[in-house]
Image 1: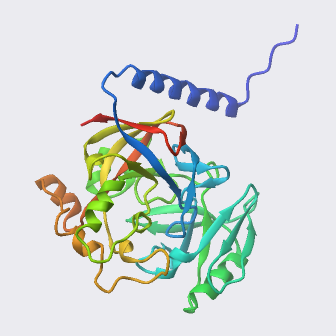
Image 2 (image 1 turned 120 degrees about the vertical axis):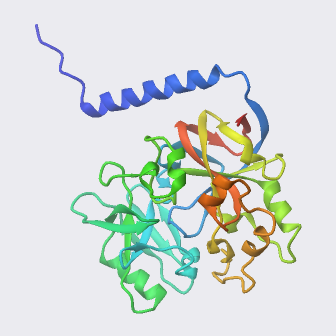
Image 3 (image 1 turned 180 degrees about the horizontal axis):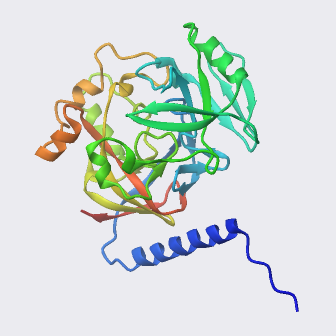
Length: 325
């Protein structure tokens, strides 16, 4: 009699993940205080960190962030002098579009001829970039991408495009970030090239409230959030301990402190001379408690960062439920 072979390790790992997700889904379904707080009005992915955004009708919430087909949120990043770039250091990065398919990424930007670069199969070297005092690792997408970026920024500096692929490079754990708010995360909280956590959420009414105080309104795109909720009061997300959308469950980790990136117009790459909306946000959205002031100092707060407890599917139009703090 033949002895059945042991299942492959990858199948065992996948089964373990499904079992844990199923247990968590059951656990949250048993809670009786889920409150409907609004409707998911927009889903935004940013395949290139600090690059142009992509709106989706449907996405998967994964441990590493939102995914739509082959597109994973912040799975690409530009590195210069061992540092991951953002709009504070290169404003026009917001105009670069990165379109991924199953085996390549196509870069496009104003004045540039689009470039298609194969995604790694094997043999790509690993490159490192620092952000917020921690090192991120990615696969180097090669000399063509580097030249295209150097031609685009046209400042004589060398650039590298790196790609996060789980299993090929380690994910950054939120608890390893040398910031005081890292203690609010779980050891399982990971991210690709997002700043802190896998996802973020904001209420539409929060931006409406901000714009009511400004002469020149800004758009939600200035804040680069993943999930937008309609029908909730301004800043209602501050009170959400857990968020359930579709089959996914997410957990509040921290408020999102806003930085000068928000002052770069995502449509033009130009920075507001008045440093808006940051200046107006500081007039009414600074940290209030002693603990928050120690963490966020003079950075105003808008939106919240989420960890993923249960992976699942979400769609624009889904009801958003919350467990309150």
